[in-house]
Amino acid sequence: FFLFVCLFVSMEETSSSSSGALPNRGNGGDTEFYSWSQSLAEVTITVRVPCEGELLRSMVRCSIDATRLQLLVNGYPNVTMEGEFHAAVLPDESMWSIDRTDRTVLLHLEKKNQMEWWSCVLKNQPSIDVTKIEPPNSKLSDLDDETRGMVEKMMYDQRAKAAGLPTSDDLKKQQLLKKLQEQHPDMDFSQAKFS
Image (cartoon, rainbow, N blue to C red; front, side, top):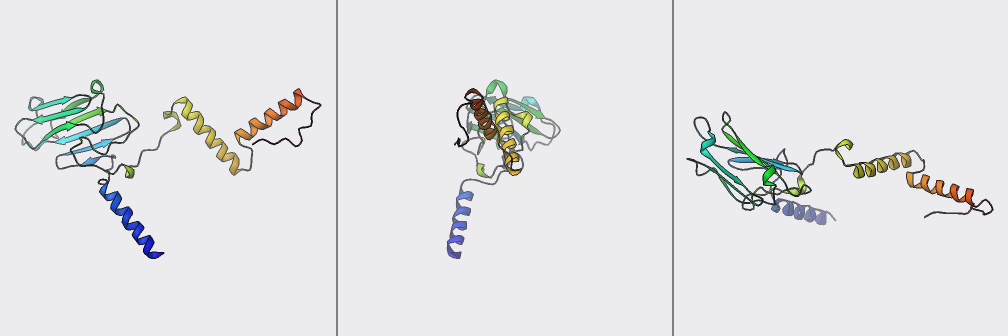
C-alpha cells in the first residue's frame, strides 16, 4: 500500500509539473521581460523595457487583432512579443499604454471566451498549469439573476437540511399535496409519497 501511494504521488507530481509552471499571484505567469495576470474576462500584461531614460510612446509599435499580437520596442530587439494568442480576444475592447517612469508597456486584453483560463499569452511562450489557478471568490451580487437564484436555493436547502427542516423541494411537494387534498377531499392521501 505504501509503495502504491508513493508511486501515485510521484506520478501526480510529474503530470502536474509537465503541464506548466505554477501560476503567479495574478493567475498568470512571469517571464524574463514580462509578467501577466488574468481573470476569466481579461488578461493584463506588463512588459519591462530596460531603457536608461524615459520610455516614449514613439518607441513602441503594438498591434492587437483577434488572434495575434505584435509588440516591438525600437532599439530593444529582445523586448518582442509576436505570435498567436492562446485564444481569441476582442481587439476593439483591448488596448495598450506605457508607463514612462516605470519603463513598462501595459497591455489589457479582453478575452472573447470569458469562461476559460489561459495557460499562456502566446502559443509559443511558456505555459502555466491552469489546474493550479485559484479563482477569486465571487459575491452573489456579481452573478446573473438565474445563477444567483440557483445558488440562493442551494444555500437555503443546505441550511434547512442541517437544521432538520424541509428543503425547498420538500416544501413544494407538501404544498402540492395540500392542494390535491383540498381539490379532492373524498380521497385518502395519507399514504402518498413523492420521489
